[in-house]
Structure formats: structure tokens, C-alpha cells
Image 1 (cartoon, rainbow, N blue to C red):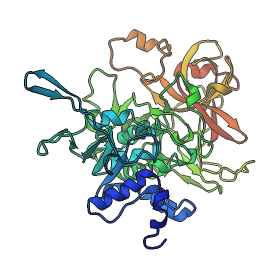
Image 2: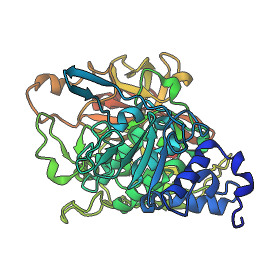
Image 3: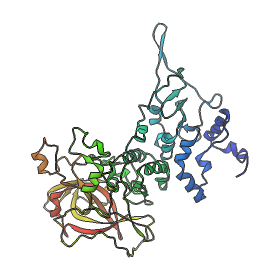
Image 4: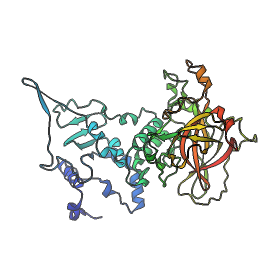
Length: 490
């Protein structure tokens, strides 16, 4: 790179970049950061450094130019150059001498723009402190509190006094929001967006992940926050009626949201994120705080096995600093094991990982290694049946294509549940005598298990769905019965 290096090729740059250069000159600034130019794609060190600091780039910039007009970089920034836009303001005379016009918040236009469908624009849209938004042949200025529009002359009375009512994502990333709740909300909306290159799934949201994992004081395993790891494992496709949109991304493990195309959402029915909320949620079942759920209704001791075969425990810190000090950090090395009376063998349950394993194929990403109970049930549509042909659960598929109706499949028990899945539309008749006998009670038993449907690829299991099974069905598992088994999950 050299001084004035772009001058010779400036006319070959896309129109949007040329307009951005002109805009920076007009507002008296010197420097413009353009991701397609500033990140050297064939320099891995430069690319990694830039991607890992995207949150700082957007938050510390004087201004972020949001080019939301058109479908690609050839659309330009309407209004920067002369005669580059045609503004139509609709005005109606409602009474003699009284004229009205209608103003629309920019997020309403953004929602239907190509810009808001792209994965890489997600961070700049929500991490930028100040944005100049070009959309609908108009320019809007937006900061963290207000929005100003060109067609509003009241500069002292901004268009929106607080948050844009069409755009509630800013509430999710507010510093007062539980960071784990924010993490799941951010990813739920991000995964609905499109990526041209599947391998960008984590990179395109790395700024958000860095910021939120910092607030949770935890690390990430393939995009999964290790804080409340059991809770973060409970993600499912949002559109359960169209499994074709939730296909595998081979560059990432199936246990991570990044391993699947299509919008993913998290099941949160049995707990609340903050301790003080647990007793204040009305009209619900007997909700408990997340820390208590993790301590009393989960049992798996998670380990990470890297591609070189090194095995390390996944250390799980507490979820938020607002948790009272009486709630200690969740130590996955000293958790009480769940009681599984239906296990086919009664020997002491092993939890420490096998260190020396010879895999037939080297994994390109870390595997999860752990022990848990495993059951075998048949699948009919989205219903689960035991060996006595009793309907005992429901499954939400990531990919239904590998399973035939009536096929016996393997399910890993992950944790206990009290409420039925919010996503499943067909499990309303899931058998549960205690619930039928106590319809008016809010103290329902923890008689459901979260289960993961898996298939085996050589020596490694892969997730294919998430569901729930009633505890009474564990004794009616197909052969070889309920087992305590070591799993390598990729």
C-alpha cells in the first residue's frame, strides 16, 4: 500500500465506495474504513485481527455510513452527488391551508431492505454509536438515543426520543439486559440472515460475541458461550415446518448454532435469567433462576477435545455479576449426578473422559466429550414412541432427511425440564398424568428430559434434532435399554 494508492483505480471502485469517499471529504474528515478494502483477504493474520476487533471499529468510529439503498455496492449513496436521487414527499391538504405529511422511522424501511438480510451488516447496524443511514431516497442520522430525518425541521425535537419502535434489538444489547439473554436474542436474529460464504458464520458476528462473552466472563467454543453451557445447547430451528432451511455447515460442529443454516432459537421455558426475577414472573409454572436450574437439573460434565486430541474441561463461570454471592460458580467437576434408575447397569457412573482415542478421521474443529444416559426410541413424524408403542415425547428436527417413519434412533439425555417445548406444535398430548391431575397447580414436577437426536459419522455423533421425552419412558427404551455412555459430539 502507498500514499494515494487508490487514485489510479478509483473509477473502478463500486459506486457506493466512490460516494463514501466523496461524503467523507464533504464532511471534513480524512479517513474512511471500508471492510472490503481494509481487510486483506489473503493475509490471514490481518484478516483475523480485523475481524476480532469489529466491535471496536464500529463503536469507536466518528460515524458509520449505512448504505441500505439498492441490492449491491453499485447502488451508491443517493444524495451525495448532484441529481443522484429523486425525493417524493407525500403531502395532503386535510383542511384549507392545513397540510399533513407522514413520517416513517428508518427501521421500517430497513426491515424490508436487502441490507437487513445480509449477515455481515448485522454488527454495523447495532454496534455503531452514530450512523448515517441512506435509504428510501433519504438520509437519516441515528445515535444510541435518537433519530433525525431530513424531512423533519425540528432539530431540537428528534424524530424518535428513545429507541426506534421498529427496531428493538438495541434493547437486547442494553447493558442492563442479562448478557446470556442478549447472547441468545442476538444470535436468533443474526441466524435469520444470509451469508454468501458458510465459513463466515462466526466471523460475521464476532464483534457481538466478543462483547457479550466479555460481559459473561466466559470463553466461546465454536460460537457457543461456555457460561450456562447446558442452556446454550438447547437451540432448535425457528421454522420447524421447513427443515430444508436448516442444513449442516460442514465447517462447524453440529452442537453449535454455527453448524446449521437457517434461523435458530433457544428454549428458555424452565428458568429466568436473573435471580431476582424468579419469584416475580406471574402466570407461569414454578420458574427457578438459571443458576438453580444448572445446579439441580443438569449433570453432564463437559470436556472439549481439540483436533490434536488434547482434552480440557469446559469451565463454566456464573452467568451474570448480579447473581448473589451465595450462588457459587458452577463447577462441572463436582456436580451431583442425576439418578437414572432405569439404567441397564448399576456400576458407578463414570464421568472422566477417555484420553487416548484413535479416531478414524481427524476433526477440523473441537469435539465435545462427555458421559450421559442414552436411550433408544422410535420416530413417527415429530412424535417419539417407546418400545410399548406409547407416545412419550416430541422432536424438533434440524434435518429430517436421514430418518424414516418408525425408525429407532438414539437420543442423548441432556437435562431435565418442567415445561413443554415452546417450538413444538404437536406435543400438546404428551403424556403427563401429574399435569392432568393438577391443572390448576403451578408446582408441576420436573418429569421431562431434554434429549438430543444423534446420528453417528464414524466415531463421532452429530446432532440432528432436539426434543423432550417423559421420564416414565426411560424404562421402556428399545434394546439395549437405557445406557450410560461416553459421547464424542461433533
